[in-house]
Image (tube, rainbow, N blue to C red; front, side, top):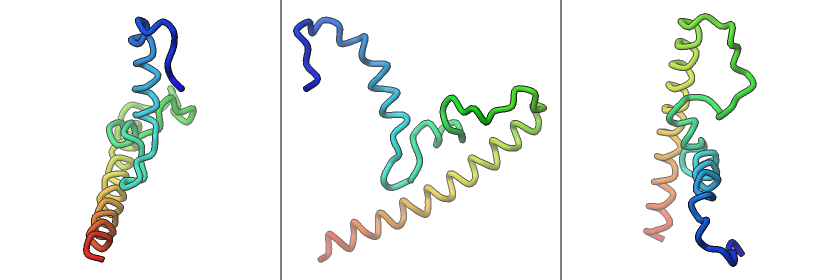
Amino acid sequence: ACTHDNQRDWDKHVPLVINARNTTVHEATGFTPYEMVYARAPHSSNNNINEPTSEYIARLQKAREMIETTARIRMSKAALKRQHDYNN
């Protein structure tokens, strides 16, 4: 259970809840909300700080396009599954 004797400190737990929500893979999209917004995994160790800005932006744009396309396809499949389940 997630209850404590002192329920006045709930606000200290909000960042943990937000992090959990933003880093949990969504069933329909196959991506986390963080990946959908920023086109990368949070706190990725793959980021090269010496990478030129233009290359970094191009890589992020390509990643975002791939994420959006994949998410759109997965959401369409999920909608068809829901429709099928509803009709049967």
